[in-house]
Length: 630
Image 1: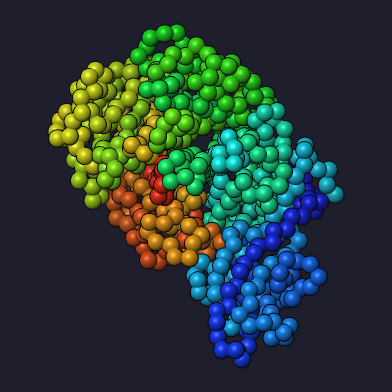
Image 2: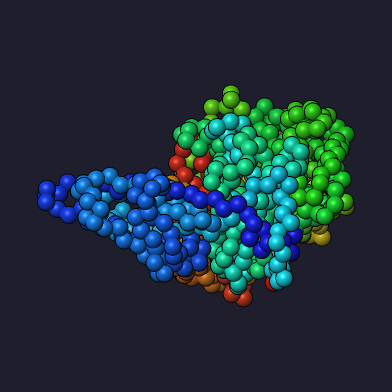
């Protein structure tokens, strides 16, 4: 595929986005001049100026009113065209091969306007994305030949991407790809339909700088002109020039203040022949369903089996098969008895540990959902399947009755080994949290099975009466926020952490691999695309940081647009401790902005996850940071 990347660039269909900007000219004396509209246009990734962009007043048609110069600048003299003062103007930017990521903005000028003036959310340099979009039914293109094609550097797999799944207000899944290398890179992004495996769209992205991110919302009809509605896709992102990672945000009912849902999961750069899912349920409490999606990361057809073993050890092990073509994905919904979709034979209101085995490397994403129409406040979260077990795991966040909304964190541990284990969890309060350090030891967990700890209940009643406790002490975790360390001496375990409240749900997988550096593709500070962002508007994304051995951690924030380093700061940590890094704690970070972030522990190791919050419904989600790979 790498040999045709640049050839496709030469033959792909060019798609142009016309961005509407309304310039409202306020009242002024009758004899005032109409003024000038001035600004610059630049590449959204490299920040370099774009010349020869056509600038239109009004919908593009008869007349181009300006062309950008070599430095990207343009000027429209409203007096020269006998424009009426106080008029309303529509500005369109048009250049073949470019699209724009910026939403419509409304702003006022006094006798004219220069981009970058009030309000602050209008950029000084208008960003356009160099992107060739080529909808093809086969995603193949013989091209014109290229004697020096770039080499394929890395691949990210996204098992579950959707566009208006379930209807106009259904699930859609924006994804973000971050360049984690030291050189510019090119991307090739391919969408494969769940229903028949066909490739329905492929596009390319050029000149993506180190540390920067590329984002795509499947609902965007300009970037994705050929994606069908009410559909699921697996996506393969190939990088030519530098290593990449990716994260996916899943949204439903986004405008509903009660029924909004948000989930997030990590894309995969490698797969495994065995993947472990610590907590799969069928109609748990009549509410929770955990559909999971399996993607084939190999080069030939995968024969996959999923083995379900109940937490309580009763009932037979249920084995469900799937056959999956390369790059494609198929789901298993435990609530369904349709063998093509679900897992017939499972028992209602049971929890299962699942082992997914394949003759090809695979990746698995689990969505946990309580969102049937009868549920008053839907909640949902997403976690990655675990490919590597260990005797020691780390988690950057757990809670009990926290953040003023009763947030709590059931922790589910799966035994991947051949002998029973009795794992121990050590709870260490986050910096500034009222929690108290404590430990809990699980009863024996048999091979291929799981057990759960719910911190709301006393330790001694976890497997029996589930008695609530609030006092703290040897048999009770005190209210607070913690990071965790899970140890199973001589064993191999995996763990999932669910972070819940009455109206929100988040989740992540504990890691066996602390690292000196982590990449976080998507950080925001009140991202709202609004004139006056505040701490309670839009999406904000506190980082949850855990030290394993690091004492000083450096955090670098890069702008999405242009990739410039926006801010760097350091924090001190005690090994074994952790803290929350809130973007709103740093005035150097601008609101209503997106950042990609690098967390560097120097010679010490850390773990990192990102929590994402917005007001309304279940607008809460988490994703794991990406450990740097040497």
